[in-house]
Length: 275
Image (cartoon, rainbow, N blue to C red; front, top):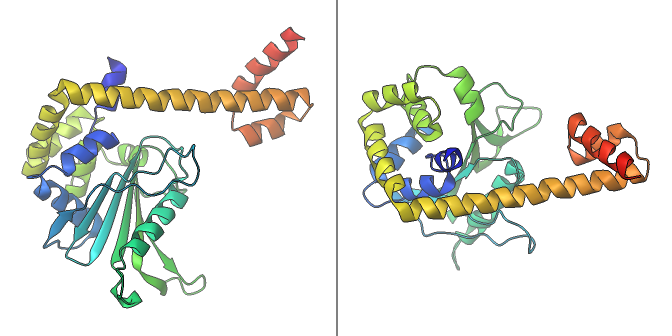
């Protein structure tokens, strides 16, 4: 039950996509994007589902969560990640380059390439900055205010930092992030009371998660992710065992496998007992 509750929150990619891409919910997405991008959106269009080619057969991160065209000439990619498993900085750059290249039609010039905004909403901390909402551009290394490459921008929203820093939602963006995060129920009540669109999103969310087929689909998808993660961790442990057999220093094993000292100690004890 606890697992099912976790995977059914709005920050789950399946729930997020179904909620914000549903016909009739354009006003929800419009306000959310206006608050992140800091711009007025006059027209918004949900693009068809896109799958970016995978780098190799075992790559699990080839599908975009949401692709939107706003004001005719701007493409927005929205990605939701609950775990740090896909190198989000590189993934964001990869997606942006692929979508930007594909947006140029035959006979068009480079001047007709659409502007690109990539929004990554993360349920983990990725950057060493204090702010939970970071927007980045490509600037000159010496003259930081000089934007070298215009037309592309990356936004990283780190939900753990948001939870730590915001206790009362005071802006529309904070209201939306409170809803998407869905962790603090008191803050959620405030966001719903303060913002009629968040209240609408809550009703849509309750309807969506009340559908047994959707819940089952989401549960099975999350189970596959957890199984994949377990296999990934087991692979690290097997690597650690091999390094121990080769008498590699414990510090290096910890560095290159990412396993903590407690995990390595348990593996070491098992290895020694076997011998």
